Image 1 (cartoon, rainbow, N blue to C red):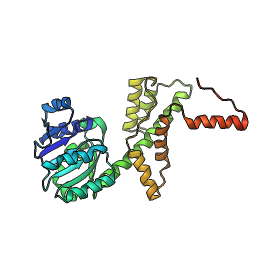
Image 2: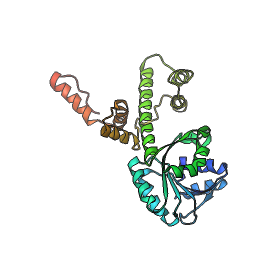
Image 3: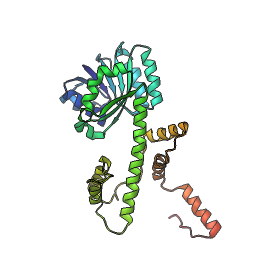
Image 4: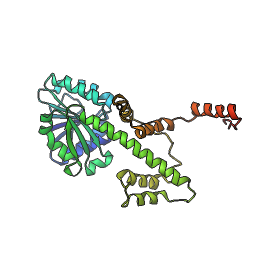
Length: 293
């Protein structure tokens, strides 16, 4: 089966290599020429999207670029081609893209991918939505890419895969926030904990053991007491979308919402809100104000 992977970043590169090693005929496209050179050891680089006629096209780019990529692919799309969006796209956009491509006889699958850079070696978790017949045709791809050959599932019609990945990322926000808060309390306790050891113990038979806890141990081993890391936490959209959908559906998700807002808070170097609250405390009770330096 001939597969074109568009977007050879950390995840796209790993997907390309894993498929190639399994015997698939893999072509790779990326605007970064250095990356194209790197895939020559296991895949065939292409410098133009109209230079190959694949049966399957796997798109692995930021969600803002998916429409642009699909538009660039029009010259090589033919009836029966299967387009897979493995990025973190909004599920409503995936439903729209599926409808538009179906009008020209092209199948579209929305696939939420989790597993990070470790997925290249160990396999990924794949949440799949779209046409069931198209899924059946390429199930071998998902089996090859998945963790232990079972870390994938067809979850329903168009949009189902990316909706599940959106919620997955919302849960991830909340878990990481809880870990951050707990370890801050440990750090402030006065016991002088070796926090990498605490993380290791938490991850050895306890009810909160997880890969994120394993990564917590690794953070402290790699970055010590974290003085060199700026307390700025980015979000890429999925947490916001999770909260927005929860509001639409009247489903309470306070922990996920608070984790999202905590990320916003991390970016405020000199919070206007907190300065105002300090001023209010002075006005009603003459509490001390710390002057800005």
